[in-house]
Length: 165
Image 1: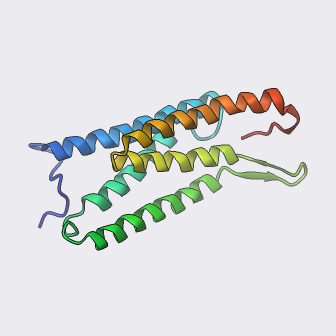
Image 2 (image 1 turned 60 degrees about the horizontal axis):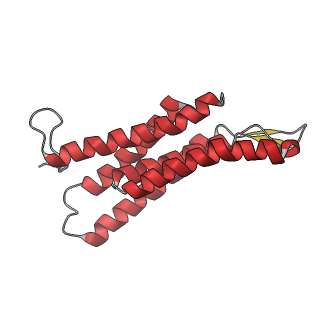
């Protein structure tokens, strides 16, 4: 019994398998693009981590969407996809929580931007899996604008509140 539509990885690949490979490559590429910014800022999560976050999220979403047996039951497919999306985004929160640090002495919190970048990268990975290309492009561009552009705005206009992110 075949459980996945795309069939075996080795051997003859159909267009569905090639499409899924492209989606996974796009997810990894989006994670790398966001990770470059984090690397340039010297943050603990960079290209490899964010590429894996996006890729893992895409694999989980593709697995849910691609599972055979649910093709003829839209309600069951919807519940499975919803469960996977909720599970991925909740689980990613734990990775993000690992980079958030609170300094009791100064009362500051560090790492929130890095944690948020992990979460948004996972969401972009899911969008890649679902071939929501407009959301992928807009999501990556807006994420990079927020990470690069708004950091400058904070530094320029709010230097006293500038924190490590």
